[in-house]
Length: 146
Image (cartoon, rainbow, N blue to C red; front, side):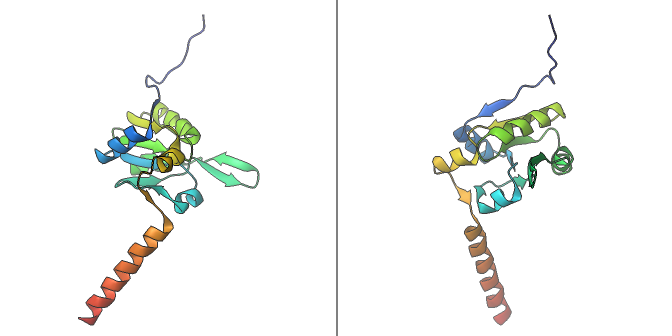
């Protein structure tokens, strides 16, 4: 019989409701979609990072060679994390890589951003960021006039 290699940790895939609950309890969220996808709208979370797992190139999608290094520079291996993408495929691969690299508390959000939106959970979109920037600009102008 052959042996199966394992990092000792199996990927745990959770639904978006469980992910929402974990994010409210202090978990961080790593959105592994491309920067372009992220900018169109993303999960509304207090602790959120956009670290793409794949890059779009003329030849197709290519794995981000710095993915683990970028996550490691922003997170500790003991941090409580939820990983998500557009539909749950990239985040599954990213979660597997993170667990193999020694991260301990990483959950894959099944269904991804599409499922999050489908459940009408809070999202942040570019127009939201624009409104916040306008409000800050208006406050700065008001302060300057005082």
